[in-house]
Structures are given as structure tokens and as C-alpha cells.
Length: 398
Image (cartoon, rainbow, N blue to C red; front, side, top):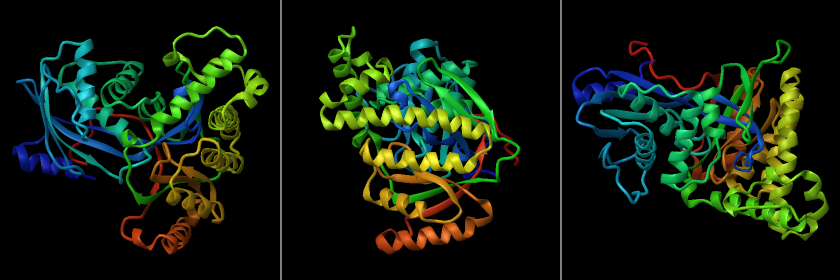
């Protein structure tokens, strides 16, 4: 299907774009909130995401507009604005800055950005960053490896935008393969793409948007990471383990038996964050085994457990997402679900029986809007499939 961004580009610039980059959104069924602690995660890309229709600008100017946000982004590759402007285009500026730190860029680009789902919980920020990096690399004849692209996108968010994310989002959106589960160890960046077992029941990925959008910069996302680090730092001190800079510490550095021995000495919030880390890492490992064996019922049970731990131990999730989670748990045809992403507004995801998709959509919407009638027209349901990772070019005539 021809993307609206292509039509808008043609109407704006009176020519076809040179290319269209596409980066999918992602879901993380297991391994939530542990990538910044160097944990193990499960992830999949889905068949919705960010398109950018673009053409080269030989004067080095970046000029991009978004169909979702006001204000056009415009700056030169040699003069990336600082300080950041706290708008959607910070992701573009950050991506340009990290790329110019490594490569000598000659060309900019003009283009139109389009997202295909509401914002929140599917890592649209990483998808914008990756799609833009892919386009900017293409016009400058730069061909980063997958690993390099992942780290460039992460660095743009860490150092420029100010979000202390790990590499989960970027890895899922770059490395994923259709009908495979990505099992990623964020400690050494090793990964396995596990194909769906031939005996696995049919499934689709359902997205339930709460009707509330959110920004990680204004959420408690960074604070939760600091609490995890504080727990790790304290546990290492209690155990007389050598430790260095607070910035470099993670719970992956602390053996689980040390946590078991000293957890009662931690403040309650820190103990809960660490409990989530160790239990979620075990769920990610068990989930990879269940997927490999085609046991979707067990995989779904683990996802529901993960969602509960995010609420009880990681203490994230607004009331609306908690309501959606509770509704999903009592809805027939849902194998398992949880809120997606950081959990501060946004959406929930679930693996569902596709033969019951219509009934599931109707049931969840009815129950949810009975609690939050003001969100009618903002709440939405979307049925998705797993997908391949980022692509630098699509057929403009599809």
C-alpha cells in the first residue's frame, strides 16, 4: 500500500522521493525493564512502523516534516543545534550528531515522516531514529553494520535526547526476522533468532492503545534505572565486592545469590526493582525455551506473570494500562499480555488466537470504555503480525 508520506512528499517537492526507509515498531513480551541492567530479553518487530520518504540535499541541510507533529525540523549537518529543543526532532538532531562524530557527512536530506500507529509503548522514538539514520547513511554512502546501527541509535537517545535506554528497542527493530523470536543478551549483545515451532498454534499480536500518549523524557523511566543501579551498588558494597563508578554499575554485575543474601538490607523500592530484574531474566530464559518448543500457552502465562511483576515490583503502569491488563487476563482467546514499553501510558500488547480476534477486540473495548468513557475515540485496537527489521528501501509503486 502506498504510504501517505510518499504522496505528501510528491505534493511538497513536485517529484518522487529518492527512497523510502522503513523501521518497524517492536514488542517485548518478556525481559521488560532489564535491558538497561544488561539482562536477557525476548522481542519481535511488528508490521507497523515509521516510513520516511526522502531525497538527498546536496547543501547539507536536514529538512523533515512529520505527519504526526507540528513544526518542520531544519538544521545543517555541520551545525546540529545544542542545547536540544525538547521536541520530536531531537531524535533527528541526536542521530545526526552521533553520525557526524564518526563519519564525514557531505549531504543532508529532505523528507516526510509518517507513523502508522498511535504513539506510546512500541518504541516509536527508536524507530524514527533508526529510519532516519538509515536514510542519512544511504544518501552519504555509509553502510554501518547492524551492530553499529544499534549503538548509533542508542547513543542518539542517551547522549542527546537524554533517555537512558538500553539496546532492546534498537535491536528488535533492526535484527528481527518475521516469524522468529529474538532472544537477546544485552550484556554481550549476543542473540538468537528462534523460529516459530511448526507445532505452535496460530497467533497474532494485538495492540490495545489506552488512548493516552506519553513521553519517556517526562516519565519516571530514568528514575527507575537509577533505582536499579542503586540496588546493585548497595548489594556490591554489602558483599564487599569491588565496584567502580555508579554510572557503570548494573544488576547483571551482582550474582543472584548475593541479592538473596542481602536483599532485606535494601530499601523497599530498590528491593522490588532488583526482584523484578532477577525474576524477569528467568522468565526471558524460560520464554525462549517455551517458544522453541511451540508451547504458546506457557509462553502466554509467562507474559502475564511479567506484566504483574511490572506493576507490583517495577511499579510502573498508569491506571488505564493496569485496567487493560486486568481485562486481558480475563478475556478468552488471549494467550498472554502485558503493557508494552516503559508502561507510563501508551499501550498493552498480547498474543491472541486470531480466530477470536473480533470477539477479543469487542470485549476488551466494551469493558475498558465502561471504566474510561472519556477515552472513546482515543482508545484503539490493532491486529499485527511479526515482521522483519529495518529496511533502507521499499518499492514506491506498491
